[in-house]
Length: 251
Length: 251
DNA sequence: TTTTATTTGTCCGTATGTATT
DNA sequence: CAATACATACGGACAAATAAA
Image (cartoon, rainbow over all chains, first blue to last red; front, side, top):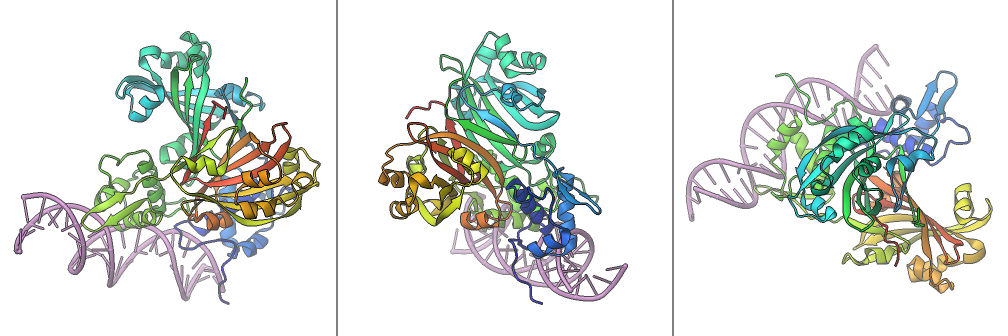
């Protein structure tokens, strides 16, 4: 029998067949293809669909099981577990904790590290300070129900917010750290969104598998006079978060 | 010599080493790591950095060359080509062509297919019509300078926009198709953004390699009375596009 | 111009992992 | 649990192109 090309599997792409198939099935689940049945087709049916051997499909399903997306049991098939993708609002009043609050989950910010640095060109332009001017850096991990969903790198101008990292450590919230320093309110000025593969460090913190995807959001927050107070680079775990941009931008 | 773990390459992940290294280098380029030199370190230096053989690094560089990110030449090293990531604005007045217009590129929309369908739950909720009600579907490809950057699936309520696909074929623009049907203006109501691996069909149209990433934007447009006129699912090639959300939402 | 060092490109062979039959 | 085919990864050797001495 001659081999015919099937369902988009590619043997010379540097990605193992079982991983390509795992990715495909993950997408199909996300598209709701098996929602009615609540479970995947049998291994033999999947093997035919992708034009591969049943062993290869088993490797793919094992990977999905490892990610917590499906659960296979002998005699019962491969059950699709509930999707738990969070919707993170992006608006003038974007805040991490309140953004996830409505979704009946326990949001939490955890301190990772902080320090002092000279502003790079990028940071300086965003904060409207001179390149090389001092800024406070703060790294934090966002969790929902104990599951990591975001990894954030914040920058604040030192001249105005020296010691804000200590406030964050106590308050576990950027909003409350600002409040403790006398800034009662602030607004989101702009957000730049892109997507890419996570690097190793990001995969570790966000508990992603190799090939895992992050949504990268570059955000500028300003006080009510329009002066930039914060520049952040936040990496969201793409499998667990979507970003929602509403254009009715009031409160 | 015993092998030590290096720079985050994982030999049991189903992703070939050369592809992991290509992803790493792509990220490093994006982070500006080699901006000063304008080129990558030599193959031997990279091989040491990742703890692999020189040939493996060569395979990674070949992949990046194929993507148009770098160009290697004997005796000269591996030059990093200019970044060409487009910035797609998301605002109340989001339109494909004008959004890319400011970036000195030739934007173009190409008709792929169209038809008539019954509204799914998702489409019906977005367009505020009854589930199962008829809607016009339209699929189009967005290009910038001939390079595919987006693949879009549009839905319009048939009751109001029957035949809009024919207008799109002539006008090659949703905005102009709306205008031709008497709708002079419309605004973006909401946009939901997520990221995932592209499936095979998407990879073909957007000319992506396996493992390629798309930004998926679910968008609702409405007329000035607030009645939904269009629901779109647009897949942006994540390597070529970032989405920019400004919160100064007027014009 | 010639020489030399550096860097990429190509070839060989071998071992291991992946996928099928 | 084989036998087979192919992709991946390694190691070494040498050729070709380039830049600098």
